[in-house]
Length: 210
Ligand SMILES: CC(C)(COP(=O)(O)OP(=O)(O)OC[C@H]1O[C@@H](n2cnc3c(N)ncnc32)[C@H](O)[C@@H]1OP(=O)(O)O)[C@@H](O)C(=O)NCCC(=O)NCCS
Image 1 (tube, rainbow, N blue to C red):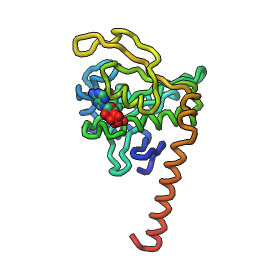
Image 2: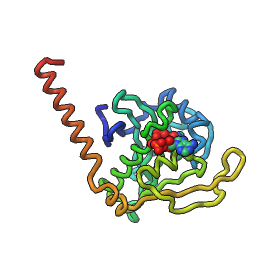
Image 3: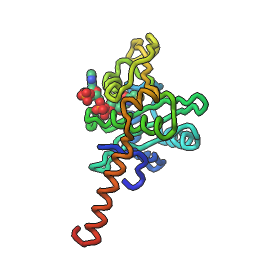
Image 4: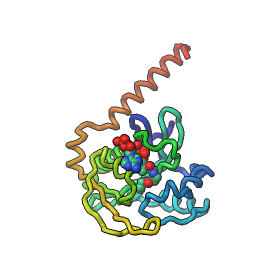
């Protein structure tokens, strides 16, 4: 919990490190249940390949990689990618992978998107943020809709998934729409709450109550 970059209500996002590429992580990226809903290609991922992927992204100045951490338990449950970022036109894409299936449908995925939108719109001054979604991935569509995303484009039959062609949706939100939906920074709210909690713990420790 000490390197959190974006703090939400139930989760926080911290920098993803090469050391995060554990057996558990390699299991997630090779678990067809987890990766089948994604838009990118599905191939077996070796440790070397994943290390190369993370390293090459860490070197780019238009991509931010995050580890998703559950605040209550400190558990690492997945990863999020913000980027590629286009600094001229101010748009960016994102992708989320929650590998621990036991943690699906608990609101973590939608909170990840909200934190990425806060980061993109309020910190990086992006104009438009979007994600490409496989139309069969109803959980992903729903988690995006929950934070305000709308389907802006549909590429008919673009993806070949489990033996048939599936539509590829582009879901997006503009900075103006985001500021209307969220006039106040969610990050500030949680950061203040987190700081107040830490201050309380420090004061109790100094009074030797814990
Ligand atoms: C897609 C993913 C990020 C969603 O994360 P999550 O933590 O489960 O998301 P949330 O809990 O915030 O929201 C999921 C919503 O979808 C709903 N949902 C789940 N399965 C559904 C289905 N088959 N049909 C309709 N809605 C469904 C849930 O009920 C929930 O909505 P609710 O809160 O209104 O009840 C996660 O499942 C994941 O990482 N999957 C593997 C990788 C992937 O597909 N990534 C996304 C593409 S880049």
